[in-house]
Length: 213
Image 1: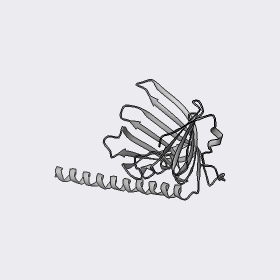
Image 2 (image 1 turned 90 degrees about the vertical axis):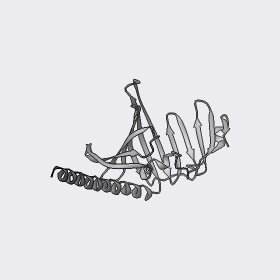
Image 3 (image 1 turned 30 degrees about the vertical axis):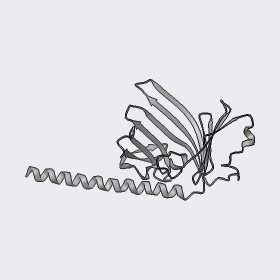
Image 4 (image 1 turned 120 degrees about the vertical axis):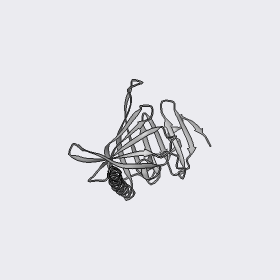
């Protein structure tokens, strides 16, 4: 009788987890559909890195404009432009521009254009807690990397239930490092210039152009 009860409890728990997984997948699918429906996206964000063991606590702000796989990212004093074929990393402090090709079909290539849909492969996902953030209902989904070599223990993805936009992303490393990216502003379908994602070399005539390929 005890074995029967244990089996029943395990079976019910398994069904409950499967139902949660399906809810998590459905919500992630809604986020992906919403992101792909926009012509472009402009995001202002805050990035925090914390490691209590190493006594590290850093805050940085940045912004990114996305259109398809093209983007312009400004972060920590560096501007990175990707025009769909080549990446241009502009470092004013060093007066240097690094030019390199990017293989967007490479699943291991982490780019801003993938950050809003990265969760579609390589993770197990589970519904997590719900928080009220200044009147916004934020549903968290826990993502567990399926690659054992991944240095991240887990990721918590906060999603605004009403808008289906990502509110924040919390990465917890296996060595105790915690990074948090919080979206402060999420704007869509903004008027962009024709040269928004074009690197104009003449603007950097005094810079050293480092072409890697």
